[in-house]
Length: 430
Length: 181
Image (cartoon, rainbow over all chains, first blue to last red; front, side, top):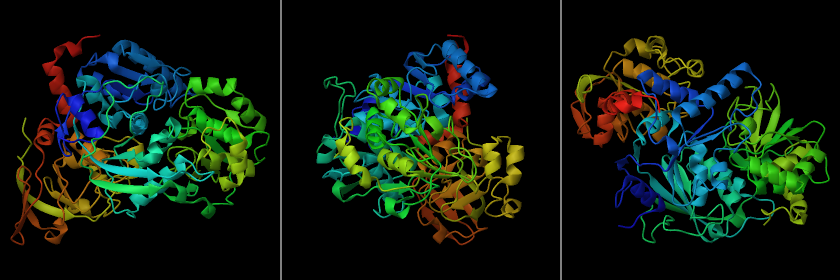
């Protein structure tokens, strides 16, 4: 029976020959990831019922990426509790603050999430793992079920196949496509269902697409309610293909198909409120900004910072702006230091924060005050997301954020395309 | 375990529109951020944001009929807890999957593929609904339609009491999990 990648991965995780959309299943994950913000809650839920241990603890990863700057009594208490719970449950993989990094990036960098894997994770942005050809489904508040039983129910989703053709114009990045496609799906422009769908990317442009761009494409779609984003297999560590890698069959059934020409896209900005409030950058250009931030699960890869550094190198950020840089992982931070990218940001007047989510996780390390305006590469921009409910959060690509931080207002990054092309570290240049 | 009242019941229905959000619609937002989970506190606030009088018309066991995208927005469950405590049941044209998962997690019976249901159901009508077959009979108007029934596995989860019930049952079946690792 012909199947999509997703159906193959779910069937394998269920020990079945095949599954089809609509089937209610309980797949067994190879890995279960939970960030630092939910460990106490999950532990309390299970302890209150009488659980003193969890099933398949060796497959569980607790990773500290939200609360990376522990400056309040509560945050210190939470951090201590997480260490205690990780030891009590004997989880297989515990990453304290300052260790691995972002839970949606580090596991790929470390080779712990590989092509062909199926996993559950607490947080919905686990869809990032589709970038290497793995399938991760959000467990959310049901994660205690996975911890207790080793699985949980889900429904096999339908798949929307998106064929990407052509290449991005200079100054246009994968985050721009993510904003635009999310907006066009959620507004109904394409007339396609997307709730609890897997968006599977394919086509000529995808085969050549590096990991950082694939990750960027996973990010915004997740916010509109898709259950997963998936790409053909790509090893994040350079490991050769093995028998676990899967691709969709040529005659697999997709609920719907969409073809997009990348060359027609222009830079996008998501207006405050929702990450799919996308407009061409020109419609937001000129808005004065107080705060800018590079990083998050959508734009926290080394290549994202190398690209932004190409724009800020030798320049100063505007006096009115504070720019925060949050590497996705400790290793990315180390590479940035080694290759002078950290220095470039410091010379420009930016502030480097610890690896992790950064201010996207409720303002950690760089909150916004009332009336302030931010432009960032955060995953989302709902009211109050980064501090004050009276602040405005715009989203853009790393190029748009870097250029806007220099200008002190939202600008079209294509004006800086020369800087991008001149920078040998900018591997995302097109 | 069995669902209280069984899967086939008769009750009055209350009809809502499309895109009713959980947060700020079914339940006031500050009760969500305040992590209020006590049904006694939640029930007086149910649906106040969309119709302050609705709670005075709702009786335990009633059906909530909604349009597309019911419980949209973040998949919080505070309002669902109140609905479950009142024994309410949901019939809607569609529901985001994350919200459906949350609703099943609190064992709230839902039929989520009732396309066009508001064409033959009006606010206050008396319905008889069999979740096991998907048959919805409008007793007030003498019309009936059939929709996709609740999936067998989902039915079992609801009967077991949602996530809490399943976790308790799993522990009873795996007593070693009650001892430290």
